[in-house]
Image (cartoon, rainbow, N blue to C red; front, side, top):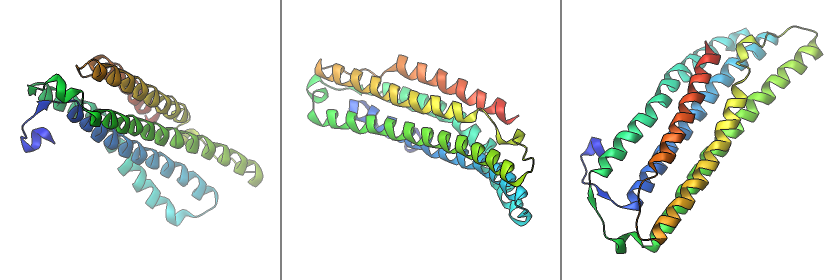
Length: 213
């Protein structure tokens, strides 16, 4: 957004934290969309087992719309985050008095809460996918039919759970680092933490891509 509008930038903690919250919102939305796409594919298995074939094309189209395109956007999110981060880093520095502003602590708390919300949202979808597979298995036993789970992407639920918990852990680490730096009157972006998170995110997205092939 900063680059798009060509807005002036300063290296102020609240600007960094605000940008972090913005991209976390993008990330949460995209993961919810991707999870919805996977659940749509699982719904086709359920509808086929119940002989509701009329609804199957709709969920197939929803699956195609919300999986690979959204997965590509998820890969791109971190690139745009790094781009905006570099843009802010080229801005003018601020004084230590502006860094030791009480409002920065509240901004850090809001950012931490954004990490928690994003992590919880991802974890919830992981549980939903796992329970849906369990439901399909029990339904097959009750109906004495074979419901193929090959297309249900077994293993994605674990990736969602791990990434959700990792989000919360990274958010906590970033919050503690921010408070420590502000107490000392100097704030620096958490480049190492961002890089580590980006690496884990890339691995998780690559595994999701592998499960979809």
